Length: 113
Image (tube, rainbow, N blue to C red; front, side, top):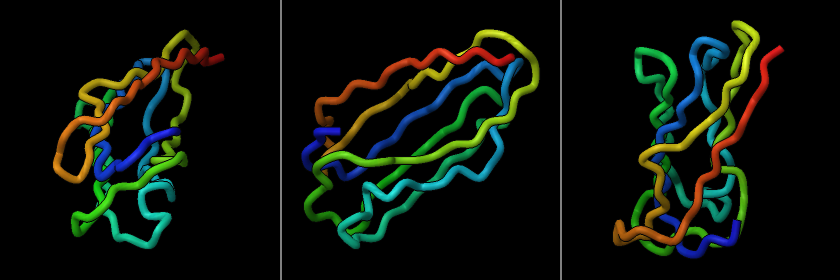
């Protein structure tokens, strides 16, 4: 929310693979393409589990998106009870010149029962 000029949003989403597993595919949210510009969206499990590598970029340069919206949706399945969470690493929001825009990414706690 409250972004101005976002052209790409790369990040890694980490989670405890002992309690939950990613159920692909991830779905691109509508935010980055809401004005009709084509996008490229990739969301791949790192192979060892516990991390999803995500890239989302607008095609063709030009102005980035401003405002708020959904970037991506992920589905997870529980494996075992316990406390786990989601953390972002390597996360940034970039403008059309690949410069970093002000952004914060929050860790979220989850309890699997």
